[in-house]
Image 1 (cartoon, rainbow, N blue to C red):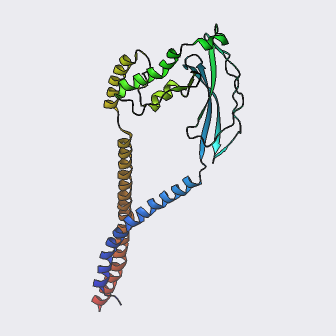
Image 2 (cartoon, rainbow, N blue to C red; image 1 turned 90 degrees about the horizontal axis):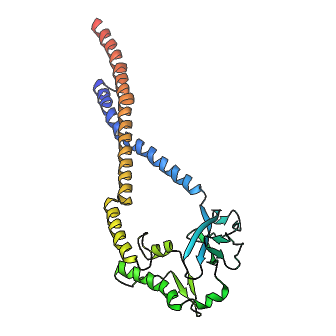
Amino acid sequence: MLNKKTIIKLISALPIALIAISPNIAYADNSGGEQSSSETSQSKESVSYQSAYWRCINKENGQVLQTMYADTVKVVDGVPERKMFNLGQVPKQIGDYQLAGQVTTKLEVDPSNPSGMTYIDCDYLPAHHSEADEHHIQPDKQQNIVNDAKKAYRNYHHTDKGFVAPGYYDQHNQYHPTMSLDEWRQKNKMPGTVTPGPNSKTQIAAAKNKAKKQEKNKVPGSKEKAKKAAMAKNKAEVKAQNRNANILKFVVIPLIALAIISIFIPWQKIKGKHSHK
């Protein structure tokens, strides 16, 4: 049978044992939540969207007159909800420009398109323009579209390396745009306010100053993410500490008190009996 000293030693060791295992219990709970969250995210469907836009282009110089939204189709796990875009009708006139020629009204959704955007180009000509006039457009005026773009790029980057032209000329010296000005600026890493042309130098100087100010006041996204991650970690640690404190306060201490009471009261009774003898 255990003597009094052995029982007291066991009671003293009980709080230490409980405190030692309590952090493991807290973190086990946290890890279980993370695993559950991971399993839920894996079961979610992969959802993306494909959108179609009309791109109205001045056939004389390749200028994009207007870009208009046409339709969006949802793609779930690589399968589009509709096979074809609902394009509707492109306007026959934009300002002083009229639609030239026929435009496709059927376009299939490509779920593998990485950009998620499809452009349908349609040509426009001035209302007073005739088909015969097309052959009298000055070749050097047409070529300036690419030259002006290259000049703006060179003025900004101080090199021609990496330049991407906004279009090309075919064997009949006809210009064909391959992108809008916004896309051209993005591909050539140019500020959003710069447009290729004779005023590009002034625009570039203003855009550089604006970009510097924005960069100065910009908070990098990576720092924000790191800050949020640190806050989440601190919150988890505080939660675990509070849990351990609650275990000690509401479980360990009452158990110790109960053990002491259950041992010492019978012991006093035994002692009393022996003293009467």
